[in-house]
Length: 518
Ligand SMILES: Nc1nc2c(c(=O)[nH]1)N[C@H]1C(S)=C(S)[C@@H](COP(=O)(O)O)O[C@H]1N2
Ligand SMILES: [Mo]
Image (cartoon, helix red, strand yellow):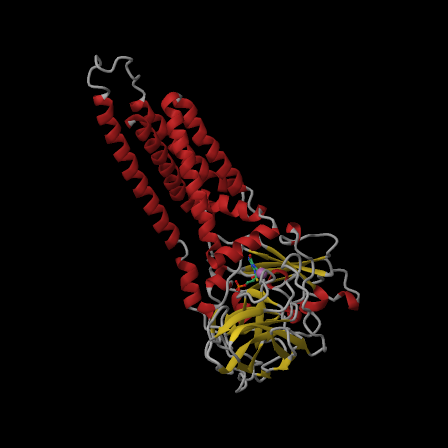
């Protein structure tokens, strides 16, 4: 009973030693090359659209934590298995550890932004882990005597050595792991300092103040402008990139670029800046979902830079119809050149709600195109813009079942009352938001239990690129009731009630909420 237990423990200690060594070894390489991050990233890259959506829906912004906990748990189980295996076949157990090292190495080197060097932490970790397992299982390998009554006090010497070696391995691993984590965390120090040093110049073209009455201030509603800390986050980054703004460069090049450009962060800040309120939406947002937020952005008009580089949209004879934005973490996001240059406020954003972009939201620079879902427009941590065609190149999400082009669909959401809430009889404000970026919202209607539609009162319009709050005073009667909402945009198109899922280009259907009135 004791030996299998110690075998399992050896496996776990070997796994711990491997991960800790890899963490330390990732310091001179890069923190993204750590095996758990690398395998997690590789899993994300290979996750079909529907599963990724399921993960976002189920775990929300904790989807990445859930993934990492899952990976560590699976590794732990395999480590126990290898520890038990090593009791019978010492070398095979260690070879098993090496197999996991190779998997980690392949995952790390194969990431969109990965290189051969990224394989190093996993391989080093595996070598150390294999060694630890070999050593520990060696101490446990004393053959069990056939007649235990006659046997000398069984393996007492080895057991003491086992305890010593296991303790040493655990302590050394903990030290290596903690040191690695500390150094990796400190590695972003220049980036943090560069962000702190940013002074955003006043925009040449400021946004007008948010009109009074845009925020209806109905209790239970989220504010009209989403604070940065509350802004939804959707991306594939297990480790948020920390880019040093003083070393940041953006290259603009490709087909039809007659004057390729490379700009620095200071170059961008010294240009004419625009400030705009824009509501960003994720294609993975289900009907009624939370992945939509509204912020005041500051940035450089992207069309200005493109024109400077000699780019013409297809309608003016330009050869490229797709703009591919690349981030420092290897994400590729493709937008239609025609849309980016059609006069809307497509921008390279440097500021969000009065401060430099938070790291989570793309510091130092991200793209933003009002009216397009984030996955086809809003590249965070951008470092490269290539002009090409949709025929010639499929970007990250397009390779994973999502549509090439995806304008935001007109949508509306009930924020209060909450689903299954109990509300008092009498007048109940039913309120929420509606959005149809770059078209604008002209009407919102609410109905109860499939009855006739009632027109809601709209909050003042900030811009056609922002959402609009709405409220309808409901004379609530006793019983269980279903509230539904639909919006109409300024092109006079009413949101369809037909329910479709988020894949491949955004969900449709009316948001409904069931409430109880005593
Ligand atoms: N580099 C990078 N940029 C990215 C993504 C990503 O995974 N990596 N996700 C996109 C998606 S799907 C959306 S909806 C928006 C979300 O932006 P936010 O996290 O600032 O809200 O970022 C976009 N930009
Ligand atoms: Mo998204």
